Image 1 (cartoon, rainbow, N blue to C red):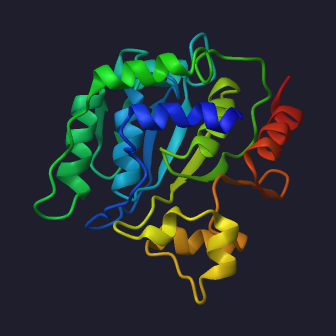
Image 2 (cartoon, one colour; image 1 turned 60 degrees about the vertical axis):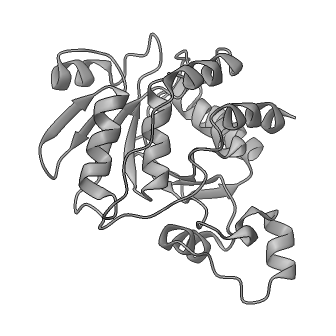
Length: 246
């Protein structure tokens, strides 16, 4: 039921952040994003990262959160999100418009233009989630960032990202958007694996997930601090609260 409700956010955003159109080359150093899951301006940025099939290190900055706010202020002279740091070029950018345009200028394939941000719809999408993924909650900081396989439009992955944001747990986000024009990618994971012989995901990041976890299903969480690795949003949320919730 939680995922069904979370699906409303994806529908409001017209399904953006579901398909990966690819990029013209991965950056040699991982991009860094200071983000709040339920902030309207952060949504277009995460959608663009999924569409460009890019990985990014996420530092959650929820309302009243303190773990990464000082670092954000030192880097940007402001505590506003979204904020992107590209260690490859030294660029430090704030705000959805600027960040999305930069991502497309640097990584999009030839002729592909940045999509309209549709920030009014992003506000509606955030409103539908209420306080989920918006306010900081007590937590313990992990020694190492976690890893999450996700794509922006997935309602199941959204539940996990909201928990990670509220608990200010940093994570390396592996975006695994669906292959463009591949209807098989929209089948439920169990049906897809049982009925489609020799199924192989279309995008590189999806193939990496299958090689690592055994299934093309999101969310998939890996915690290098404990060695835990798991699918299923409910199990992941329980694990996060048990391990890092104060």
